[in-house]
Length: 372
Length: 122
Image (cartoon, rainbow over all chains, first blue to last red; front, side):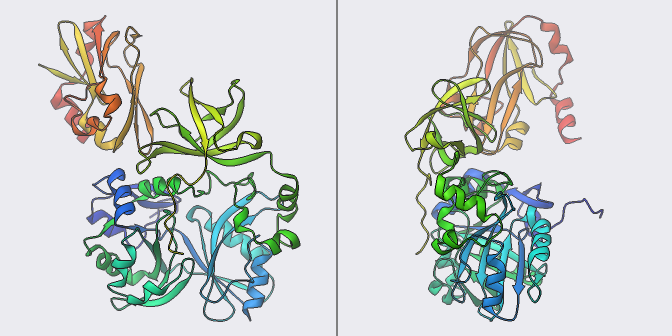
């Protein structure tokens, strides 16, 4: 296999066996959908439990002599509160460039063992992020890639029930925390998190156990496999950012409406790469802001669609747009001038040369059902 | 009635100089769940291989080209309320538009069923 051939996850053979349609994504051959199709997979996840292969994402450990040492090292790279994490807790964060643009978004977990952070980054950014961390982590704090691990997500209102049949302990995992459990004899690190707006888990296991775990979970009648297509429509309805769309090197977390992920202490103290822009925008406001957009008609407005005000002047662009199966119509997210970002604002979307009316709406489109 | 097929995955049947045009079953399978169809205005004059409609799945928008030239005389209003009909009956009741042929000779350049199946399956 040549270097630029798409990589395969350990579940590739399972996807083939299930009749998945594979597409290249972030350097991997990934299932975009299974034979039932994106709509059915989306709705199944909202009503039952969807099983996702997210092994393409980058799992790694940041290790040092103490939690204090690794947390401080990580806080220099992200605006989130890492020092405040209790053992087993996890938090959403972003890597920022010097100018405050977003390099990636990620999850940081405080490992039960002292001096260890477990970090998950986006598939398409992992080489960048590993390099970025290696360049910026201080002496004594090191990065270890966990390329021998797979990651699957089990998401939906019946996820807990399905997983607890094999590992009752998962019932007690709080939202945004993890536990080491055995699932049918397979050692797994299970966190209560995900990217669908539903309750659910992300399960990290050794490559050798991935297919066994996958098939064990699929044996449950409430669990069906779900591809990247429905993963995208689920996260869009949940109002969650996708790197390369709602986040990129030009966009700050303040513009992206991610201020909730920046603790008060960090806003005041700064001390992370990109802090100058973040603090300035927090104090003075932003010129553009991420919003939800609901077209009034039936036509979806896709990524890149121009957003205009009532006079026809361009005020922004759509960054993700499509059809929301649970909403039952087209939905989108994008950036508009701050003064047009208030929910209820009327805008026009320029789709194939025609101006279509739409409303700025509050996110998410579907209420999150995380177990808090 | 003879059905002809285009390389862009449209089908055509002709009756009394009026072509009925839709997308093939292969095309709807590739698209996945159809959620929106944009049809041309009645009276619009279209040229062979020109884009005349848009079909959108959950994932993406795709252009629909007309395999024959002429004037659009009817569009399938059913598709506006029930775009998923394209997934259920692509080569039947989910036709997109009817075009009054201006150059019936164009039909000769299209594929028959055997040729189209070979084109799709290689």
